[in-house]
Amino acid sequence: MKYIFSAIIFLHGAIHLLGFVKAFELSYLPHFSGNISKLSGLLWLFVTVLLCITGIGFIKMKSGWSWLAIISVIISSVLISTVWQDTKYGNIANLIILIVAFLSLLAVRFNNKTETEISQIMEHAKSIDTTVISEKDISALPEPVKRWLKTSGVIGQKKIQSVWLRQNIRMKMKPGQNKWNDAAAEQYFTIQNPAFVWRVNMKIPPFFQLAGRDKFIDGKGEMQIKMFSAINIVNEKGTKINEGTIQRFLGEIVWFPSVALSPYITWESKNNLSAKATINHKGTTDSGIFSFNEKGDFIRYSASRFKENHPDAKRYEWVIDVKKHAVLNGIKIPVKMTATWKLDKGNWTWLEQEITDIKYNNN
Image (cartoon, rainbow, N blue to C red):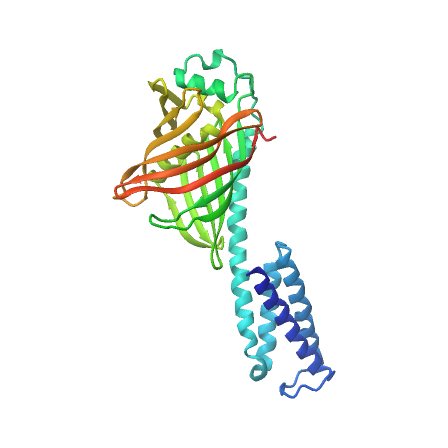
């Protein structure tokens, strides 16, 4: 689609050359009956140049291409109106270019908003001193949690205060869907004031593109999904979303295990291989069960979670299962996981994710 649209821009620009040719009588154009002054002819040439620059900017994803496109379309539409009978169909191309440019501006606005949210949470983490974790620090934790922290390798490491990671993802948008949709995502976490911003981009054949952003900041959650990063498909917030996002933060601490020592998380041993964690931050609280194998590796997280956000929404068990572990930046973490809803009509595994890169403490 990118190359089809760029071809429309360049072709539309090339057609504007006819106005310049007609004005300066550089060639005989029998199908162009309107009269064009030399001044107008120069404007037709100017639009050609402007559209070519716009097309190049679009291909190279330069931020200003949308405004150039809008300016080009405005001037083009005025010129077309002066020789309407010969050029009226050019407004079809103008309309296509205008719609895409407008959607692009909305996408830039969405992306800029997300970047601002990321900057806000990550800026705070820069000023936090990190201390080295010792055996004494974990002594009060339940035995399965202590075993997990030792196995993960955090003893002797600095406490993690910020995280950036990249994921490859496969998702199913609804129960019963057979085909997986591929996506790429990145996520930012801060620990002292627990927060995250997660953004994802997904292509859905034949030409749709979805952009999503989940966040948990100051105890509040928000979920947005936009088509072409511009048109709202999902825009949810409220108490149920707050709980869902704090549950998500809790379940994902396995990527930065030292957060288990944070004062806003309390632990209760269930048995030798599992423990219940409760997180409480700025009035939002929830719990989940962490399960481990005998070696101390984390293998499963489960929580009771609202699947939807409407007033009659029900809680269902939400489960994360680990498929593979790896040591990244000196810490053993799960790098392949699945997420499953246990619904009335059966289990729905809707997410497969793989961590491809992770960095700690702004490094």
